Length: 68
Image (cartoon, rainbow, N blue to C red; front, side, top):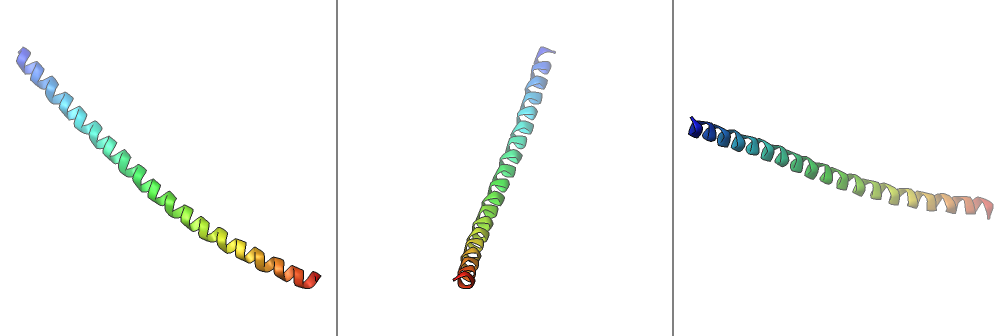
């Protein structure tokens, strides 16, 4: 009886550890996906900011032409 109970406890502990491991793997994969997505968004924001800076420069030149 004691051996059966101990074996059952070991089996349940192993199953629990496997389940926790799967949860950790899923969490790490989700963090990786979010990190890659954030990196892409940062790159897109940088390109947009550079474009806005260029447009602001052109606008400043146009204003100077009218004011000048």
